[in-house]
Image (cartoon, helix red, strand yellow):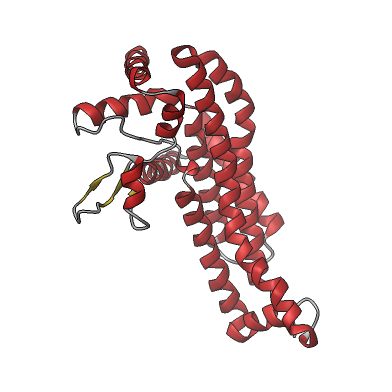
Length: 295
């Protein structure tokens, strides 16, 4: 840990020599982007401008990589605990995992009235995965990012390489998750109600068939607002928290840790809360998709 702190401090000091406060924040809000350059070649963007020029089909290597790594670590850890589980003398980690299982299972029983074996595992995955991704926001700003900047400069020749470690501060990650939930909403709505039932629910509710235009004006935007609000709520809250951490780091530099941990105490509420909200809204939306109505 001491070596990590020293290397991170060296990275901060190295970056401070070349970056203003505005450039420092802009650098930390940028992504390690891979895509097609304007000259037709493929590779990593060297500047934020190059990343923008790569267009829609570019990939944020850092946030995508971290999200996959965190998700895989979560699955492997829970699988390991499950294989080691015992009824007679459960250990502390087993009790902790069982507590999470019971908490999520209780929320599913409260919010989901149908029968679908997918809902509980989906809710558990969403809850734990988002908490773990959000928790990366507590890592001091320049510890991992600073080391990555040094590696990028001396190994890959990328000066001031961007490298974000909080996947949920990338709107592509949060919207990808919310659109996946939206796909499940559409799938189960059509499966449970039929295509005709799904469309009639949009057209004939809440005011009946004689008010069809007004029903569509209300129901269609409401339907598409679900994934948008789900993804942007998570992104906005974590992005705001990250921005405050960056402001602290840009003003205090290498002596940022006391102020960082003070704000981290308040931020601890946001980390599980946003995971809980995302999970509960997913359960509620999928419950509505399973409900059938007489028309």
